[in-house]
Image (cartoon, rainbow, N blue to C red; front, side, top):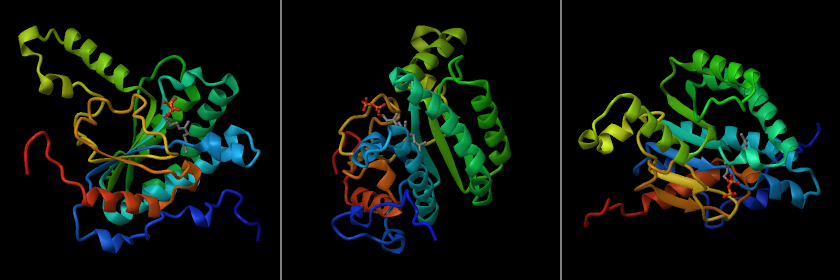
Length: 256
Ligand code: FPP
């Protein structure tokens, strides 16, 4: 058998002992986990491969993270797959990422559907997103619309500032008077008002930035930064982040 060329490095497991899902299910499980899947390019560069190979290797990480979330019973997951700023990347890489996201949906939607995952997309459906990608997105949404075990939102052509701009545009289009503009009025015009704010945000690759991800929703999220490069991320890293989350004290501006 061919060795899996994209298999995660064994020595990339979380350093301080890996909790199993049963170690965690007695504690508070986050209702919504959001991930910034960062480090694909560096993973590839370390192997002398083109950056696109790093994205390809990120697919297994994405699927294993979803499996881990299902194992823990996390009902909402959001994955940052392409930002409104990522159009600035080299044209070849952008083209690759469009095709990759489309083919990933084609390859994986059946198994996600069988596992009870509802697939949605947060972001702008603008002219830059190729029609065939939009078509694949719509098919995936339609196929999985009835699933409720877990909702996987792919943030695609997504920007936190763009989402707030779009909400303000809707407020104006709805004719909301200035004195009626409050947090509820804005929240109800975000892309998915039904979704709870993320309890936990994980960013891989050692970068300590939000990079325009879910700016409104992250107000009180717990942040975990992991050194692991995204293609080496596995559910064990998710479990380690959830253990970290379970040890945090959330105060929401109050006192404990
Ligand atoms: C933000 O960092 C990170 C993202 C928007 C994630 C991008 C992820 C991919 C392109 C790969 C998707 C992979 C799969 C498996 C679907 P940034 O680089 O946009 O921001 P920065 O410049 O602040 O670091």
